[in-house]
Length: 143
Image 1: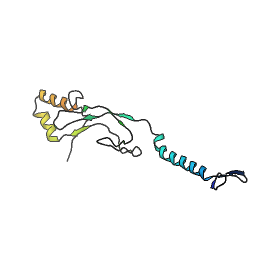
Image 2: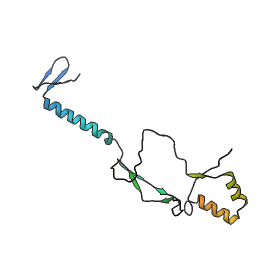
Image 3: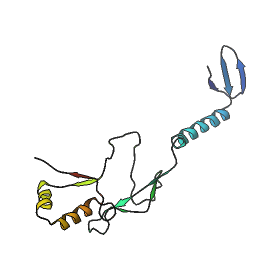
Image 4: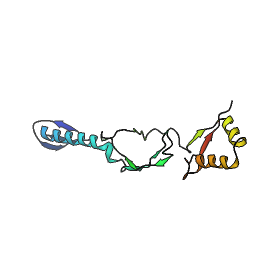
């Protein structure tokens, strides 16, 4: 057993376990070190900042899943225009892909009312990662 007692004297005695009697300055120093550890501990075990890849799609169609300049996840420095808070202790779901919804009517029109050239152009615009927006999923609502 180890205990620290506050007293104006400094001495060390060994009787029935260890008892350390220290000065108030030592307790203040130990307390300061403990508080410093508690302040630094959450960041000591964190991995270094990780690169974040960013893609942008704009309403006007100028950017279609266009890759942007990379950024980094890291502690909030308060200087960013937008801050995304990530709680790494809570995992909700994995991302399988990105896509959009297509109604059965849209699918029917693409399949029956477009020429082969038009249909191929639509498919490239939707699914091609280079010349299109590169979606990997399409949700078709039913019912």
